[in-house]
Length: 451
Image (cartoon, rainbow, N blue to C red; front, top):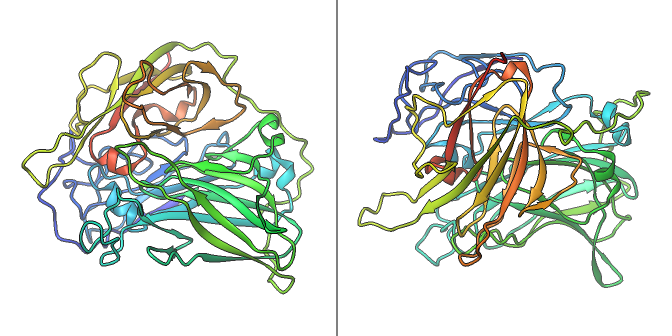
C-alpha cells in the first residue's frame, strides 16, 4: 500500500508536548497540531513509514509523509480501519472524524454465505458539537451526562436533542451483508434492527460472519443473535434480511451501562430503514467463489509460552487544578500503577515471536474499559474465570465495570498470537476508550526474534 499523508490541521500549538524517546520518525514533538496514522488490526511491521504509533509525529504543513507497507498474504480478509494515534491527542482527532474503513478483500473465500450479497459499509462515529449542549452543565454537552456524546452514521449526524435518524434505503425481502465499524472515540454501540410487527417491536436476526476483521468459526455463524455489541474500535460483519416493503424498521443502539464512573451510552435510533422496491440496487463487492469453506483455525490447541496478569485502574481524585485530567492506568503484574510514558526505555512486556501467550486482564475500575492491542489478534478463552468456547478472533474486547464491592474483579483470559514474523518490534496495547488512552491507560510490548 502506498499512502502519502499531509498534515493540514489548523489549530494553535498546545503547551502540552511529548518528545519521543530517541527522536520522532519524521521529526518534531507531539502537539495538538501533530498527527500520524495507525492501521488498526493489520499485522504489519511497527516500523517507521509502516505502522509506528510510538515515534511518528507529522507536523503541520510539512512535506507529505509516505506510508509504504505490504498487507501480508496471511492477513484475514475483513473490515479494518485507520485513524490518528498521537498519544495525548488521539481522542480529539478521532472525535473530529479523522478515520476511515479499510477492507482486505476475499472474505467470501472463508465465509461463502456472503458471496454475491449486496454489501453496506456503515461507519459509526461520536462527536461533541459546540453550542449543542444538554443544558445540564452549561452551553456545551458534558459527555458524561445522561445524553452521552452525539453520534453519526456515515457522517450523517444524529444529535441531541432531536436525534433525527439517518436513513438507510433497502430493497425488501433479501439478504444483505453489513460491515459495521465503530470508529467512535469513546462510545459503545449495542446494535439491534427492530421491526414493528402487529404492533410489537421485534428484534431481527443477525448472523455474524466476522469480528474485528477475522472470519468467525462455523459455530459462531450458525448461532443467530438479535443484538451486536461493538466496543470503540471494534468491527462486526453480519448478514441480515431486509424488511418487507413498507414495514417500519429502525437500526437502534441500546443503552450500555459503563458504570457509576463511566460516560453515558443511551438508547437512541441510529437510522430509519426504508424498504421499497423503488430503491436503487446496492452492488456486491464479494465475488461468487467456488472455494470450499475453511474451518476456523483458532489458538486453543496451542500451549502458551507465558501467562501474564494485567489490570485496569483509575485515579479520579479531583484537585484544585481545573485543567488536570483523571489518571488512567493499565498495569502489568504487581508493578505500581503508572501513567504511560512516551519516553520509556524498557517495554512493559517482552514476548518472543513464534509463540502464543495467555493474558488475564482485570478491570478494577468502576467504569467499563476496552482492551486493544496493535499488530496482533487474540482469542477469548474465558470471562470472570469461566471458560468460553468462542470460535472467533478479536483485536478489541470489552471489560465491564467493577461494582466497587465484589471480591472478584471482572476479567477476561485472552490467548495472544505473536507468531507472525512481520510484527517483530515494539508496539502498544491500551484502552480503546480514547479519553482513557490519552489519560495514560497504555502500555508497550516488544516482540523479539525467535531463538
